[in-house]
Image 1 (cartoon, rainbow, N blue to C red):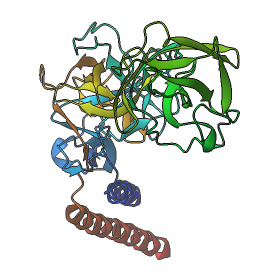
Image 2: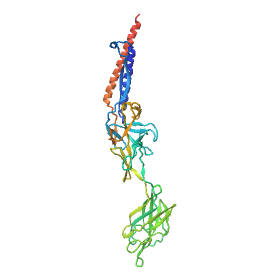
Image 3: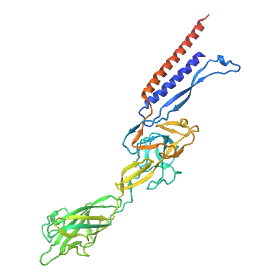
Length: 416
């Protein structure tokens, strides 16, 4: 029996070495919490035995527990790197709308191709839905956190209003050879127009398009003529657009536009754009675009994400529009040592751990979420190395006990 007793010691020491080695291997694993081995002694209790004369039968591995003591934090500067200072786990789901939930302290999150917040293993971080002002809409609904890349619906430009400051007389910035024009207009030949100006509008997808207006001087004021006139042409992404009528921009002797001659529709490539120059003036020495407005809309792109102390995720679009997308859900359990590890620093609930209960950052015993920080492994490397040496000594001692038992058996066998 002594050999079997020594063998249980070998098995126990081997389990202890394996557990300590695992802790050492995960010393740099984000959100990892060290495990510890717990052993129980073995006894045989036959009927009518004298308890004072019982010797033990060795040991067995009773439980591998977890130490959920707080790990240190490393600052990363990444908004979606989240740490929990205090109690709680992030709630995760392996698939967007299905799958058994898992729970983790490892908060290294990012966005996948669809815009969902996921961890490195692709599991979806869960959140409460919220209104745009950050008000939580329901705590009975837990869903993946989605971050749209754009906000707003696109609309193509159909109407534009441009205010120009046009040079007086013939002081144009271009090199038009003569007034009135004697050469046919050619957008690629700046000797056929007085000046031009580029501007941007949007197509049906909200994508910017480069347009350009060209101004050909047809009349210049003199002693008998008090009106300045320009013929206007347009190109959009290099495609000529034809005005619905001969588009002229005319100014009276005071430099004000002549009413009725400025708005015009430009048609090309199956599209019509109305442009109004009604507020333009001819009172300067240099050509300039004073204002440019149009009714096209481009979706606003995501420019920044923030996670506040309450776990509310805020998205800023194009630097002007900030809205809440949801609130990070935290989970906890009655018996943390009943959780079952599933890898990736994650756990699943068991009958021993009890069902999860949910909450939010900083409320009802839950810890505070720290954005831009990651909780490091709570492994003390020095202590683990000392434990490893002790486990090795225990293994050697049990091996020696087994060797001694074997020697005794050999001695008995040699008795004749």
